Image 1 (tube, helix red, strand yellow):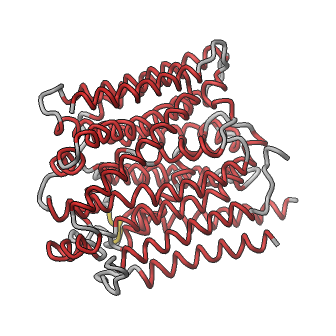
Image 2 (cartoon, rainbow over the protein chains, first blue to last red):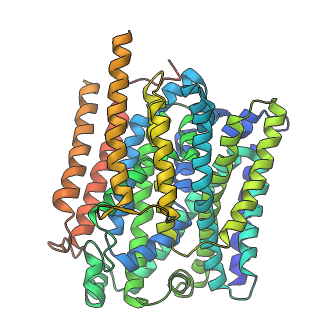
Image 3 (cartoon, each protein chain N blue to C red):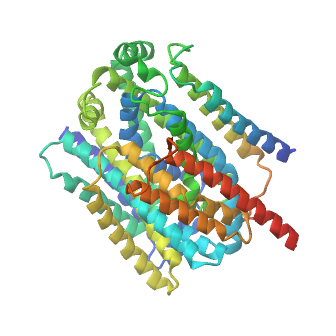
Length: 468
Length: 70
């Protein structure tokens, strides 16, 4: 096993090193470092978007989600992702249209320019910081749990996380966004290959699809329908999750920035349907692994199930490739998000280019340290924590949508999103209830936000018409 | 013509979503199966596939030009 691990890791690290070398330029500007020259084509764009989207939470969380909550997990993630890519067709166009007019250096800076208010920029940055840090920490926590279970007493738990962050820091500091895009492409391909090899092996061990579902039926028939054995996949949960996931490109800056830095609109649109196909291809084998787990490891802990299904039940080279694949999946999401936080901070700065570049690099280092510390305190509920992160950042969606739709967006959207974000944070802290009239808070908040946002936008549109 | 197809696609995807969540994805419904695949899984897969195909068509007929180019 160790020999195979060293072999695959050497190839993987060699490719990352080459990606950094290709991306490095001595006298680059902060724009080149942060926005990768805004010239990313469809194939690279789709791989970087997919790798940033499908992370350790997909690789590890989704099999466990299928195992614990059943086949409704497909609707929770795959269907929501499909809706998101359809939405990208319009959103990519509208975002690029506004970015062409006012310029783009990051979502926070973009909002500051669109609203003519520094507060708009700070609101986006605070939301990103508050919800991306836990999300990145989840990824790191996930890989640490897995590696710790797979190789007990080989290294202290925290050192797995430290190695990952160190690798990420080295190549992102050398090559900037371009290196991250190249490395995402490598990681996306590895992830897809590995998840299919493991998925097909698990399906074979379960006796093929028909026998697997028959055996799941015998173990726990509730896994084959909604809302699942624990009642998680209620209609409210699925609808609220779909909204949160559709809004990811609006409210998570690492995705918004990827839409702007692509070569042209055609590339954005090609990337959109390619991500949709990739989503289906990546999530399907996680269902095979999950159903296999439901038959063979129904009562095992998450870490035990994953280390058995992904490692010990596989042939040695596949298991070694799985470790590298997981590491790659985690790395691609982590680097996208930490780099995005640096980008957001930089878009709010107004100093010289040299100063901004230095400040961005230092901020990426600081964010990495915060994430490392935070990852020690996270719980093991990877998917649910990821969903909280999606929901939290989506509270600023009215602000971003207002900015891409209107030339002079209504400032009332800033008040609305601030209130929503504040209330959601208070609910997480347990200060206000997480249910309203017996309904899930996020579901109710989306309803209220959609209604008020529509009213504010229609009123603003009519006012503008009257003025002109 | 492109604008019309785009509007029809948006309407189709919106209607598909509403119909799916209200009428198809019902709780405690595991049949009818399709080749041994439980109802929720194959209907969920089919709806997902239809939306991805709609995205592909939308990318081909999107009626507006690249803003950066213009």
